[in-house]
Length: 282
Image 1 (tube, rainbow, N blue to C red):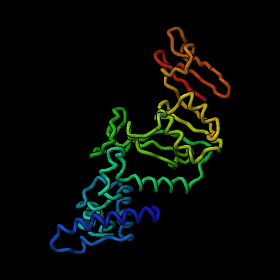
Image 2: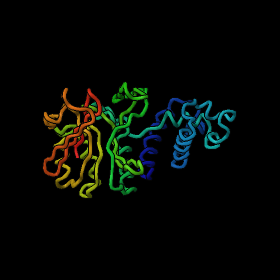
Image 3: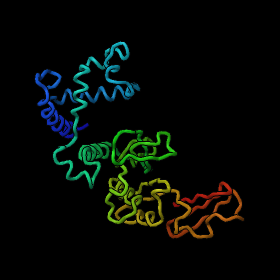
Image 4: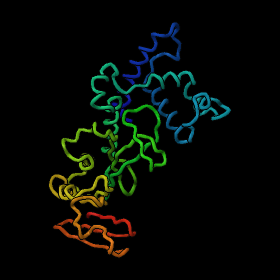
């Protein structure tokens, strides 16, 4: 949390407090404006509750000494905590409506971008990075909430991210907004890979992806300037780049592997079961 992030949140949270104060006849310490120190204390309470698995409790239970001791109430009162949570804002809501239709991530876009800059600037990735997606469980109101039945949580916010393969450190990330993502006519999976790898271009690192991101044209592009990166990833069986000879057919023996070479690219086709194959582009 950089000073710029804290100041941005503090600015718009105090603006919301000023609006809400007008509905109170008597202004007490609960409704006063906040400051950077108290804002850090609020984030500390939220992070501690998550770390101790207390984030499913209500605020009454969090600040009840019989449930959680004095670790939360020592920071602030329950009334002040509830008021700050209701007033917490990350942007100017008076101009939000103008951009919300084209970018549903508007309410937190600036803070998110500042946070990702911090993630990039404070870490040097290793030789291998991985680009994949994660579904953060969430059932509240959100225009880009995603339903994935095969995931344990099923409902949530899908975040696409690039992490260091060795340490799992998140280097870059963006929310999945579906058709609202402006890719400039580039396939979404390819667009995500090229955007995430901006910070490691020209470094000859390797990128590992799954079949939603991987394609043969992408692999060829990454080898060239300005990217100079290699990629390892699975390919969907319906990709037109896969030769017919390497696809599944009835007479092909289980456990067989076939290789196809095209300049610097290698395509591996493996049949683990009678009903399917998987292809890997290198």
